[in-house]
Image (cartoon, rainbow, N blue to C red; front, side, top):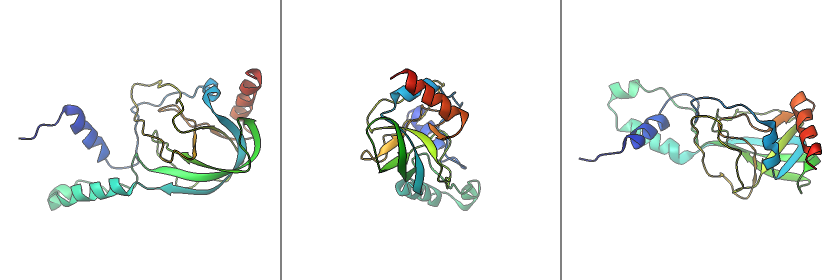
Length: 186
């Protein structure tokens, strides 16, 4: 008989749950000082925003559902998003507050904390970014799922596990506070 570790069974159960993908049991607070981990901080407009769906995960779920009896299948609700889905978009940079970027840059957002919105207004936004493979802000909650950078050749929005992303309206109070933090650290 095949025996799976309890953690594998729990993971399989979580991956097959219904509703929006979520990887955190509790939300963590946003620490504005984490902006110092960003490789770049820009103000710009978001264009070409799209959700990139994990087709492999959808195929696995369908195979799982196909293996069930009709009665068992009826207990499952259609799942519209997966933790491994992410957003891809361009940023038309108007102001660079930190880092060496200009023009139009490609970026991703793997918001496994809460799932990505289906659409995003163009902005303008203050956005803190990191390069693939650079450190994330620390985990400040009891749990998180951290996936590899989905497209290592693109920038990623800076986001601590289980906390909100560094994506703010450029004229808001949070954007102003981040600009103050960046000016003090120069």
